[in-house]
Structures are given as C-alpha cells and as structure tokens.
Image (cartoon, rainbow over all chains, first blue to last red):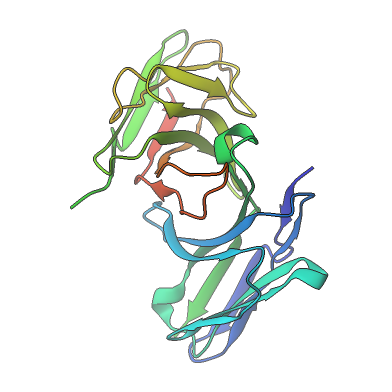
Length: 117
Length: 117
C-alpha cells in the first residue's frame, strides 16, 4: 500500500522564524515521485517541488529547502525566515507508476501553517 | 496563459438533484483527474482519464460520473446517489508519460465548492 503521513496538523510561528514541515511516505515501488503543494486560502493547489526516488540531492529555492532521505522515507520541507504570505496548507504527495490508477497523487492530510506578524 | 478552468466556483445542490462541475484545460495534457477534498483532509481520487473516451474509477467513485469526449474537457456529475456531496472538488491534469512513469506534476484548477441546500 502507498501512504503519505504528515503528522503535524497545524503549526503556528512568528514571522522570521524557520519552520520545518514533516512528510513520511510508504511505498513498495522502486520508482516513485514526491511532490509538495501549497494551498492558500483561495483554494487552488500550487506546485512547489518534485523529487524522484533515485535523486536524493537536497534542493534549495530561495527561502524554501527540501530534505529527501530515502533511508527514513522522509521528504521534509523547510521555510527559512517565514513570512505572513507563507500562511497556507501544505500537502506532501506521492506518485507511483501509471499502473496505479493513472498515476494518481496520494496526498498526506496536510499541514496548516500560520505565520503571525 | 495555459491552465485549468473549473466552473462554477460555488454550487448548491438540492435533494435528489444531479449537478455537473465543469473542468477545461488548454495545456494539451492527456491525463485528467478529479479529486475531492474534505475539511482537514487530503485529496482523494474520484475518477481519472488517461485518454479521450476512456476513464476509470478512483478510490471514491460511488455517486459520481464523468465523461471524456474531448481532450480538453472532463466534466464531473455529482448524482443524487452521492449522499454526502458537500466538499471542495479539484480537477487536475498531467502530461503524457513514457515508460509508465512520469515526474511531471499535476496542474490543478481553482476548485468548486459544493454544498447542499
């Protein structure tokens, strides 16, 4: 079975704090892809990052960074110097092959991040 | 700009009524998906289509129906058999793939909020 767990339901920080959102996944596939999406209050899902299973390089994009560790099946997301505009629900998602329901995304339950001024 | 358009943004359903949610994309993607999001939860797959005139049930297809007569369009009908239709519905699309896997992210529309009158 494939599963994504985001254990943190809600996180509240003060602006300029660093914050890490945890994501743990389960899959038997050897090839798979991991994604992070942001859902602002308006509702649309905004793609942030993808990582494939054979590339464990960490990635940094501005204030965002991602730490992929296959050994612990984790794909954590860190926001450095958080800002109020970062307030949103963040979803981690897993995608296997298209044999699995057309390559559907399997989502975690989401982490609601609130950044206060 | 290419993207996915969902309409209407808000929809109300009366008891015993079928309602149809529209999803149109101009990204030239072959694969399209419908997800349902309930408060505080991740997204769950309702139906998906990998090619025109073909579609498959997802994890929670009961009470829903779809069609895929054109590449650009993938409407979702919420039938009267769906007893708990109140939710946020998101349509997504994805490029084609080779070799059974794709690292391409799914692109999402802005969603439709459905409520019961």
